[in-house]
Length: 142
Image (cartoon, rainbow, N blue to C red; front, side, top):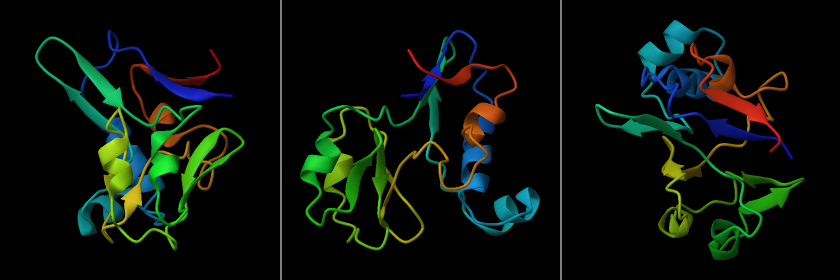
């Protein structure tokens, strides 16, 4: 299965992946309007310091603790991709607590959100990958 991988040596820390992710998942068709009018809720996050930057994104674990801990069954595995049914999520956020990578966050409705590889809103490649100016983020099988 293809996954998102980051080469931290190439990451500039520009946060464009975050903006592209937030826009792709906003449901709007104008990036400037989406980012101006709404607080952004990216499903990928850049962390680092003056020496290194790296993107934190869901790793789509083969034995995911988040799915096991979900009290409502909102998290599930579909063809290797861990997805969240926003209608089932009650916002207990247990999944955030158990994720060993810190890849799950809250959205504007206080329910869980995470990278779903842009399967619902993309043309085959995640928005963070398309928007990375240095090609530090790739979508491939390893």
